[in-house]
Every structure is written in C-alpha cells, then in structure tokens.
Image (cartoon, rainbow, N blue to C red; front, side):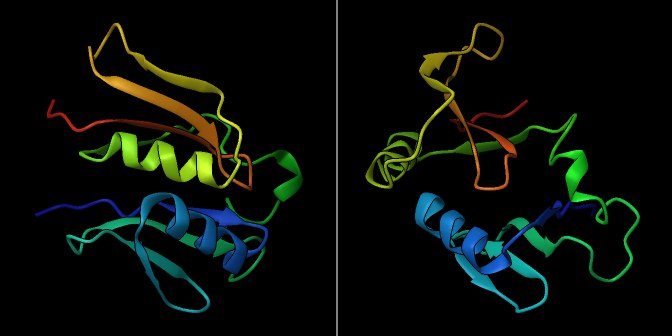
Length: 125
C-alpha cells in the first residue's frame, strides 16, 4: 500500500489548524506537526511551521506558499463545506461551477497562508 500525506508549511500552525477544522469539519492531532484527520480516519493534510526542523522546502516563506501546488479535495459534502466557508465570511476565488474536464461541481479558495484549494464533488479517476 502507498499513501500520500501532504505536508504544507504555515505561518501559524494553530490558526491554520482551526481554519481547516472549521471548513472541513475534521479533527486535528499533534503539536509541532498537526495532522488533519477526516471523520473516516483518513489523513487530509499535515501542517508544519515554516523554518523548523531544517526541511529544505520549508525555510523561505517569503518565496510564497504553494507555487505549483493545488490542494485538491474530493468530498461528498461539497455544499456543506461551501456553507462553512460562507459562515466564516471567507472569500472564494471561484464559486461553485461545473468543471468542464471532470464534469463535477467544484469551487476554489485560498487558505490563510495563500495555498490554493479546489473543493470538488467526490469522484474516482
């Protein structure tokens, strides 16, 4: 088995963890590395503070977060997540629309650190 647990560098690990919990309704574990976990027990994302532990891609926050990266979340709760974002009065970059490639509904926004997220209806490839 192979699984990917993406880790992103964030400015304030607690602020970012709270935002992701509020948007996705997930739980978080950890202190120095926070793991965001879905209801199903699957890891969604890991949050790591900028500049700690000497990781080569996590030591220059001024370069900008997420260049070349889209955090693409497939969910069976698209409308609920969109409502959570609305309740937070958080701006979206693209409202819910049908993606012409996947033919699934999706919307996009940036997290507090500027990472670009696309939230889409669950589908398989």
